[in-house]
Length: 273
Image (cartoon, rainbow, N blue to C red; front, side, top):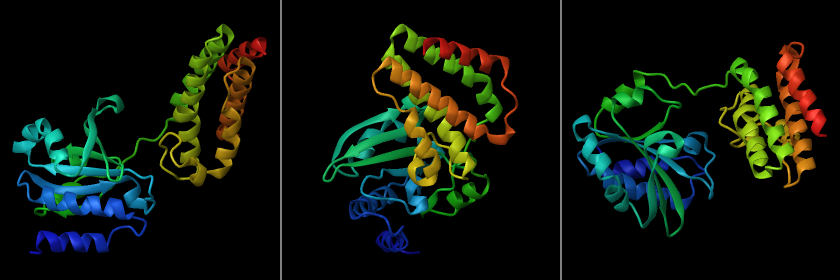
């Protein structure tokens, strides 16, 4: 069996060519430290690591597989464990993104954002992507990955259609009342929840909000520019109308004639203009 250091060097040789030096150095230290902890049975990487799209602005998205019997203890000690990996400036858990297993860390020298998600072997079967297996104590991690299939949740066009026009009306009411910060938030929500995911799905990219939209779908990115508003009621109305135009464009030839709720929402929007 290879020594830990030999495994680390082998990993770095096979790492994405885009891996920046600070990220590589952090990974080297993390692998050496965590592989020495008998409670840790596997270390995996996801996100931009998988697509060779890492750059100086990238986070490191890491999955730490833990023995079932030790999982509760490791979860209690996450902050201390993360503190052994570098100069830890700040850290917190990921309940705000619906993922309490996630431990979000910011390290310094240089500043580096690292997400550590602690899972059991059973957890590995259900996942949204197939992570790169960086290190494993034995074959159980690879076997756990083989027992499941990665599936990223795709937007449901019918589900969105039933809601989109209600959201359009809601946004219009906020503009009419002068709650422009709320209106701006709603416009962002439409982009991130409806327009971005539908557009990314259209070009075969992961439908994750508006992530990397500029490179994945330049045409949609160009159209979405008009959906961005400044702090002004009339400009918010213009941007909302542009959002509707993009949505109708994304529906394309599969769209049916306008529904009653669509017609009503658009009539209301026109009364404010």
